[in-house]
Image (cartoon, helix red, strand yellow):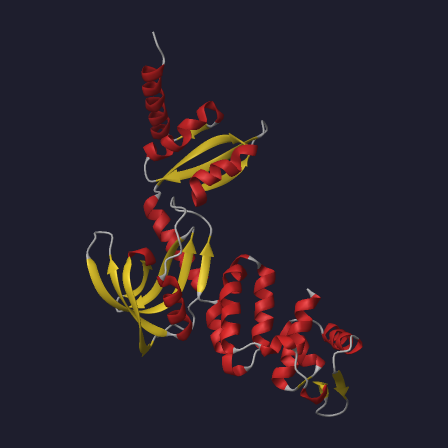
Length: 315
């Protein structure tokens, strides 16, 4: 959008003092002609922007004029990127706008803004848990991620055993209101549930984060590993196309459309840990869903149906 380019142009001019159309074009990923038109549009709109011809020339703000947007403090810029960063993972236009804006920020707090934008990922696909309140510790961990500080935490594992750990916090993920911390440990990368943390202390020791670490990419890998363990069994079913969104709501990522048949029904692959788990999800659909394979899921559905008939159908 042109509006975000014009804002980024003003910020760049304030941060650098003077820019050329070619420099703007490179920074904002537009043509030189577009950059020149944007500069001329700002000048025509009354913004104190003027060109300086000749060698070493360019465009400048008259008298070092400043825009209201550049009144951002380091804390405000970090807060802005914390809010917008998760949306950037889902919306390419937001990601593009943030990339342009961060280039125009003063060098003194550009790093904090970039760290804030990469601190959190939102994964909307559920793992069967909903309506959880945001843990109070999230803000503390988020600050540690942005400031690159090690954290010491009391953590209760799946077996219930509590341990004290010191980790390098690399990023936070909100997956359907359940928060996870992706961190570096002595044994490599690990993922911790925030709701299993009893206490978190941010230390004064600098945390190490790999230069090539990408939170979105790493979380996708974590999800694939978890779901591969949780859903080893798949089934192929037929369902009316209009009901596909409902089925996807039941199975989440484990619902993969395979194509539409001539009769309008869609072939879908669904997955769960066991045949009985798939059958229990599908039983309520009655004859609306037809299971093509495997036989183990068909057998479980037949068993559930038989039990219901015995319980509810009188002689």
